[in-house]
Image 1 (tube, rainbow, N blue to C red):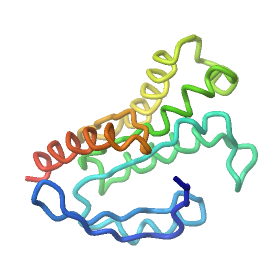
Image 2 (image 1 turned 60 degrees about the vertical axis):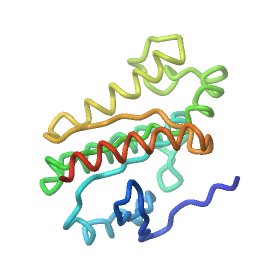
Image 3 (image 1 turned 135 degrees about the vertical axis):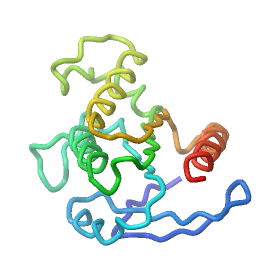
Image 4 (image 1 turned 180 degrees about the vertical axis):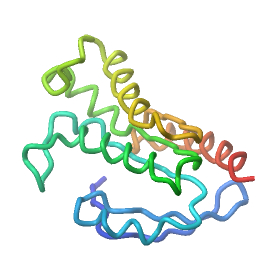
Length: 171
């Protein structure tokens, strides 16, 4: 499996649970973010994917900014946007497999000074807590999922749950 970063805005139409969906995959690089505002109308839900394994990496565009911290900041911006204040957010804390392996070598506390845990479970809870804190102004539902996108079986189960909740939200 090869990773190919999203550049610009990709429009994908698909069917799930006998319902058609249109998904806009927004490139996460800072240069792409200013294009997002053109897509803000008619949004029924937000799928926000955060690569939690990037907790020990810096942004390509800014070597002083931690990638996970940047994702958390971006989540705060999106979740507090007036047009999305009540829009359900489905947050995918992705790459749990890589996160787990990295924690064995590089403690989360090296990058988040307030973190005092020692287990993977505590580290995951810390990241989720930080994400929920960033969504404190958001008035819609926030659903959090720990994912490993390359695990098709688990992703299938997760997406089944997500689409059931999504259909309840948009009706």
